[in-house]
Image (cartoon, rainbow, N blue to C red):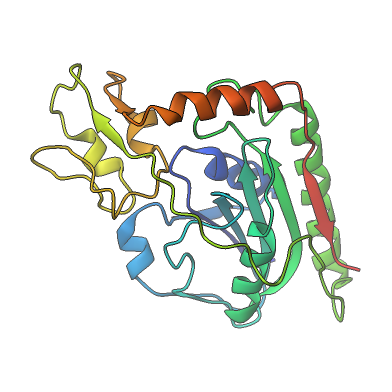
Length: 256
């Protein structure tokens, strides 16, 4: 490996955390490309053979975020590891979607992983992830990458992952956080929003732009943003009731 790069979209930190952990375990200096920042999704990036790029993104209702993610990257034969994070429900077609994007952009995908992270809407689901088992799997994956690339064991092999090639439909999530009475008008939510959905004067979010990633909610030190929809707490309660006792494990897919 000539260089390692982490390329992540991570509004609440899960995807960044896993991609950085893997890069650290590989043991080489690495560069971070944070695609949560809009300017990085507008600039073009190119890689070449010998590079390895760790792609990581969250799962929203079974798909990648609907923002043309990683479309401005050219692989030119570089290696790629595709990773998604989800809140203990299911990742559906998101991992396959990410793999297909990377292959279409000229990367050779040599591994893919679906990790469990803290659920966007809950403080309970996935709250302790990554745990010790996750870290052990990250170490094993790093060793697999190092050995495979060094010995050129990956040549001629193809990666298969779970998912329906006719991806499930992007579902428009209607949970739009808005400021409440505790809001101090500091404007930090405007800076944290990855899609520019918050008015910089009123601090109100535009429903047509919001992707319900909750970056503004998690990043507000005064806990001053919330979803006003009365259905939202019922959904969270249902999710926690159905999933809090389900301890899902990470799923790793390697070349055959």
